[in-house]
Length: 269
Image 1 (spheres, rainbow, N blue to C red):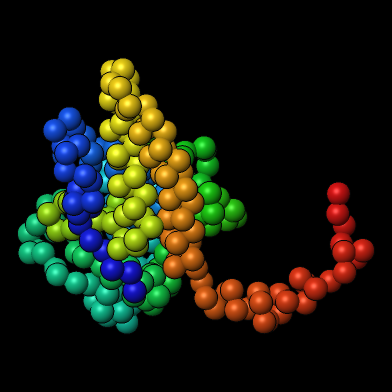
Image 2: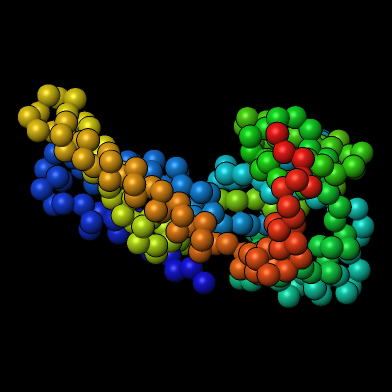
């Protein structure tokens, strides 16, 4: 299990004399740029929410960074399905608030339990994605499904679908934040070091642009360190989030036979 820490904690790694020339906001802005250069898995979490379609469209939350899967309710849930949904719900809000919003499911839903629930797997079916929106992840099942019903997403994060009404379930990614809306980062030492080095590099880059003596040399020093630390941070993220079972299958399982096939039996350019 990954432990997460406040994003602001990186400020404690910045040399204190540098705050005389740059503000905390400057360093946090530069570090956020660095964070967004890392694999999304280090800075996002998956959520699932149900929306009502009105006049073939749904206005999606602005917090959405990418969409994994969109499904449509093709079957009305029976009692057993509703019971499975109830097991996935956490921290329900008052019913009045629920009915007065465009979002049908304002309750907090346990992401993994919901996707495995009888309710979701019985009542929902994928829609085919059409268009070229960058919001939909490249490996989304929606891109390759054979469903006749379709959807697309415009630049304003408004989802348009061939269904005039009904309900859709959207599995999406958002940036990691705590209950107060503050950014969180994984407690990985290489990640923390990269964010710190990058922010410090940007500080010296700014001072070098003002022709300050020695600033350009320090900028080059931190640039090299940041580039090296980026590779280490990226590697740590991918390694710690790797599917151990899949790797074991590749090394010891059926995939091993494919790896050992002599090259003369494989078409190679």
